[in-house]
Image (tube, rainbow, N blue to C red):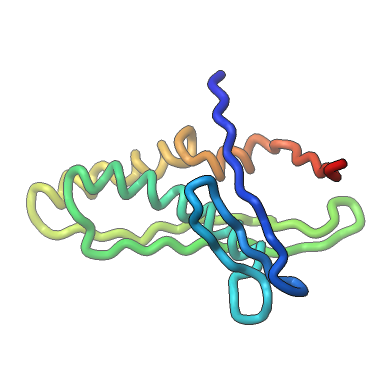
Length: 139
């Protein structure tokens, strides 16, 4: 198994508002009423990971005419499991132009979606594996 550390740092901007900074210096503000919530960012990561996989595979054959991904999940809360999302679904709506290249991309699409789900997308694979999360307090 190959391990490569990934990291982001969070900074508090105000009550319920934060800025994420990655190793390349890019920033993403979230929280508050007008920005993405952490749950929406999770759904974005899930869909974005799959979208990137499918896009890189199919675009080698043809540029899509339509490329949309919708990610849904039901937020539940119960005594046994606490707050969490269930019924996660990533739905791809992708169309390609008529012609040989578009036909090749259309034919490849189901395999590309399956490859993303089954082995490529780090985000969905992490969720499916049930990876434990350890919360720590720095000294």
